[in-house]
Amino acid sequence: MSFFSTILCRLGFHMRSRRKAKQTEAGWKSVCRSCGEPMIKLKGGDWRVMLKAPGPSRAERLKQREAEARRRRMPPPRRRRPGDRA
Ligand SMILES: [Zn+2]
Image (tube, rainbow, N blue to C red; front, top):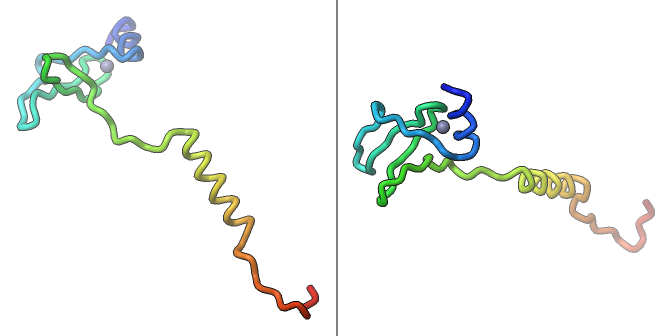
């Protein structure tokens, strides 16, 4: 792994390993020579890093946590009879 290829990986330009390429039912698969990221061959002949399962982004996670905290802070309103004194 060279410094140059590490930079390329960071930028999204991965180098597919010819040796590790293999044909599967889904098409050609290989890995990036420098970072080992799994890659897949597109119909046009280009190689693309396989997409990972999309997880919640940082902003989404923050929003979820906020919503949860709000729910905890505000329990469902209790009914009070007019005569009750707290
Ligand atoms: Zn890479």
